[in-house]
Amino acid sequence: MKFSDRKEDETLINLTPLIDVVFLLLIFFMVSTTFSKESQLRIKLPESSEVEVEQQEAKILEIEIDSEGVYAVKGPDEEAARELLNASRETLRRALIKVVQDGDDVVTIIRADRRTPHESVIRAMDVSGKLGLTNITFATQTITKDSGSP
Image (cartoon, rainbow, N blue to C red):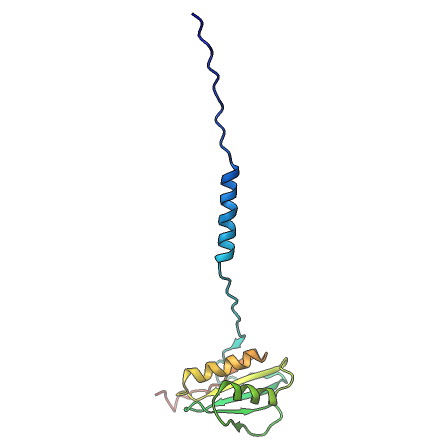
């Protein structure tokens, strides 16, 4: 009795559909991923010390905000701050454009009352940043030992 030899069939896995699925998943994730572009303002927080720091010769733009959120803008070549008609973004933007033509070397100082609404300070920072005024600092006052803190 003669038995026939069984030929073992090689089992092959076809990788083409697997590769197609991987490419489709890759395309899906690339399209569905949201990329967020975060812009950051370079903010130098002031130190409240009694040591006098030598300042560089730079143009200074001051944005003053009172406790009610009313803005006043003082340009580098002006003697006193001018109060704005209202506290809207557009009014502040126009005032800043009128005061500063070249924003490369301008230092923006925000002087806000301690009771100023947070929204008003953020609005001033946002408008300044959109105009290219990214060198922003905040004015503080030094607390003396005699006055104490509230």
